Image: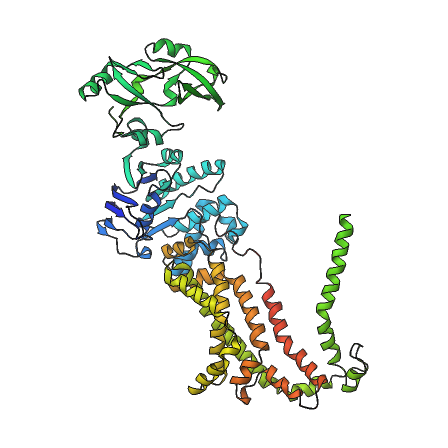
Length: 367
Length: 270
């Protein structure tokens, strides 16, 4: 049973004015696959490096099984790490790369050989053990980096953007392989990425970060359906949520760009109770909740807007309509049977029951 | 048109190559001639050829003894330079402090100080501590030649990502293990360069050993001076001696060639 606690962790670099990571508080259960996600510079890699012991923790405690690990050196933490650029030793064969940690710890040679061969079998590297890293493809190098981590049978695996150097197809394949590896090993994985698709598809729980702070922690479904603020709503989901600055008046959200949409009764009641009647708020509608097909226009007669299509992107089953509503840009994800040419002027309907409302000042979610 | 210009370049290149090889031709051919044969024609092939020069030169140079001295001084000095300068460069490159930046600048600046300006006080000081011998000489070479080596290593180290150190650290390696098992092997191409530069300089050095070494520890270049008297110059023996003395350097170069592999760090990182 390996429980990991990050108790109000802070990080400040000596030359920096502000904290790079602030009040990072997270409890990780045994065997969980946690993904830290956020834009570049949000502090996710710094947090991972503090867990690894490669960066000092300025304030707060990092605990494994209840023991404070802040002052424990990286080699004694029983943590394995996969680096973004693989960090394979070029002068060593694949076997020696994978056996490096065990050899350093003077592990029994026969046991090392068995462990490396077992790991190579899992990762499909058995035929490549004598090769040097230079003779491997990107995907194979990535597997060696993973293999080097798994032979040690560490309590915690840290993966720092391990797929960012791979092409799109290989990334999808390796994503599945890492998820399978996690299930097979049953260990704690902490995975850092800026790619929200990776986060959504692999994580048990996602920690979404911005400007050094945790924005929300939850399952992929929770983050998608119940974002706590505008940042989370905008970051999770592809394409990103459309935001409209509106005013709540007479049961409608309105603005000068042509929005005049009735707010569903339940939502209206909550908004009024929270004191937003007559006030400016931000309306968030996901692209897949913007419809252009006739049946939707009939279903949501009080939620229609007149838009102009600027760019159409045929993605296969769906088409992205990059459109304009007055001066506001927004995206509608529609069925490709409902394809529209750039320049088309058409009515679109917002599925308001799935809409989110945000406070304009604090950007916190109202509903 | 393109083919013709390539041919011209090839011919010019071959001529320059021959020009470079010409001194070797002179040394090799004349080392097999008698003194009379050398003065009769320097450029001709040896006729008749004699191997006596090599036997006589071997004896006059006390070749085994002076070769041993040259080998001990060169190998020990170069090993010291490689270990100390690569470690120093590693420490300077990985510690991004103002002090390390300043130290590197000092090392680079010291390359601009001419040896001749320090040789008298240096030998006086070393004489004061009874170090005017081959061990003192190695220490002097370490001091004189580390700067360039540190500069060269530092450049190579900056291209080795810090993630290599961190990965090894996570695997359980301490600083020494990281340096000897990960970093030093990755510096192999630069180590060969540093070794070649220093071996050639130290092997051929005359001035510093002449000031420092007692006669019993004379190296090959110092022994060669015996062939050049005030009134006579024994070119036939000197040239045979030179031929003998360059063999170890050529052997080292041939051995080291396989280590000079372009892009040895390929595959370390994406």
